[in-house]
Structure formats: C-alpha cells, structure tokens
Length: 235
Image (cartoon, rainbow, N blue to C red; front, side, top):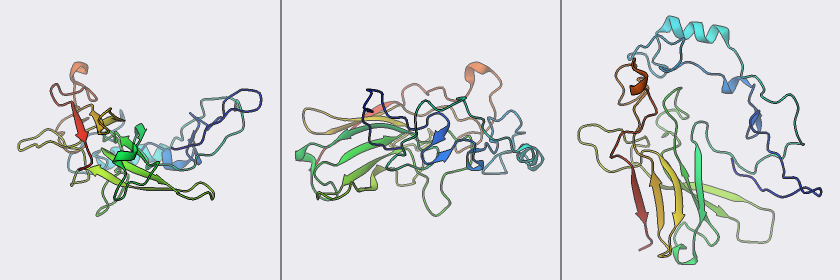
C-alpha cells in the first residue's frame, strides 16, 4: 500500500485503517478469508492437490466454515485516509528508496523510486493466475507524473526472476531473488538490495515435500548461507 502522509491540524498523524483495513477493503471481506494451505491446522496435506495442497475433504471443511477475519479494533481512532495505490495480496512491500539523478534513464524518470517486494510464504493460493507471473520476490519501479497536475503514479517491473517466482534452493540453483527485504542507494549511486534468502518451505509450495513435525525445523526459518546483497548500477 502506498499513501500520502501528513499531520492533522491537531498534530496527530493520518490513519490508513491498519490492521482492520487492507488498502481499500475491510479485512473482514471474503477475499481475505484463509483458504487452507499446508500450514493450516485444518489442512490434511496432499502434495498432488495444488494450489491448496490439502486433501479435497479437508479443503471442503475449511471452506465450509468460511470464518471471516474479525476486526481487531473496537472503534476507529480517526477517519480512514485511503492509499493512492496498492500492491497484490501476499506481495509484502518491504523497502523503498528514491533514485539519484545519475540513475535516471530509460524507464527511470526523475524523482522515481524503487521498492522491494519480499513475496508470499506459500500459505495460500498464488496472487496471479498463469500465464501471468506471481507478484513478489522482486524489485519494482514507481514513476511519478512530471507535470504540475494531480499526483499520478505508474508501476512496472524493474528487477525480477525470469520464472516470476521465488528461487528455492534446489539442484542447479542459480543466483536469483528469494526474499528482497530492503533497497537503498549507496554513495556510488548504485541500488543495494538486501535479500533475506531462502526459507524452509511450509510443505505446500515449490521446494517443499513434507510437513514439519519438529517445531525446530518449522517453516519460515532462513536457510543459512542463502542471504545476499545485490548491487544494481546504471551502465
């Protein structure tokens, strides 16, 4: 979610609805309802049944209850100010920095920004349908309008994996984005992208084969030696 922040006349900050609102939608709407996944306690794991990777019977049971996400706050602390743009579900916007003048060129306009998307953790269905690639595990570009009219933003891919997916550790693995968590421009005007690295899969997505029994081996634990810092410079 991207928003324009400012202070109210009384000095308080604007309120964007978190945690009971995601972008333009209330968290209680059906689009946010969990649909299972290998890390869901009600899911009986079945690797042959993507995208939920639950048996048909257990997935039907999950959908049968259709329990919406309840609001966290009893009342809103202030009127909600809507964002100017939102990203796809489960894409996880994690870092942003504005480009220096020396980085401008090609698709990068003056005043543009790069931002990192850590991506999802494979708990639910993908946020895009093939042949469109999933959104996440990448760095994207925001350009702002170059005139004095109303604020307008345009978004496009900037640095991403050719497969459009996270680069899981596997035989033949090559350098690629796993979970970029931040992007900052250095004194050399190059962009430095911090990548958390690969994590142990919950058992339902690419690279996962079984559910973890020992909590010490559970999902979301980083695989040592897979974190990296990428350097992106203008040629």
